[in-house]
Length: 330
Image (tube, rainbow, N blue to C red):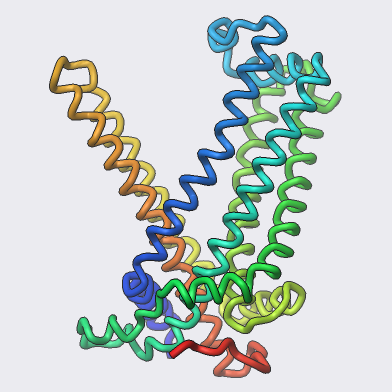
């Protein structure tokens, strides 16, 4: 099969399987919103508390040059080790707890999508009918909770490796930006900007590999080490296809984000108009809701597309097959 045809079918299959199991999109959106809220509360509250403890006026800090805000805030926090330690402990507890919750949610979603992909048949081939989509419907609370019980321990181990990668990137960033080499240098703003851009790129790649690892673990019901070898085989076998799916999803995310920012800015223009401005609140909430749902839909679509490329690689013998495939619930 030509690579372009395989890529189109993979993306189409991913979208249709995700639509057939649409409750997963809603669950992922709610879980993501809960995660961000839990993490945001100690960050905002902790920073404000520390600033009040040391007598720093938030308004005065915000009036400073943006390039000076981060060093100033870091210096303030480092000057109060007890408050800083309490803040970091609170943030760490919430971050770990929220992350474990997300690992559990994602393990159930991956398990359901693996079963749905196995039961869908050639759903991406025309003609497209409602009965064809319904064949891929596999979401149920029993399947979801069964998937959580089966995959969560391995997703938790994978999450530990994810945190280790994040920590390594963070330590490298802090050592470069706040190290003695560039502190006080005229080149510091450029170094900080370049390092921040590099961190965003590296974190994006790490998250991409993390998604591929989740897919391999769920697809073949294997451990983290074996999943790493399968992902490497997938990248070698279908580099162009996997990278193209990633690029397509990334472009759609960027376009959705840009559209959301433009919509929010446009609604902000009428927010100050008496009475009429009240309509901006539900519209902004709707734009936030739509953006979040689209993000989750794109993520699950990409996961199923990667899974299709993965199965194609197993069929042609370039990727090892699992000794025991996950049992599909009837």
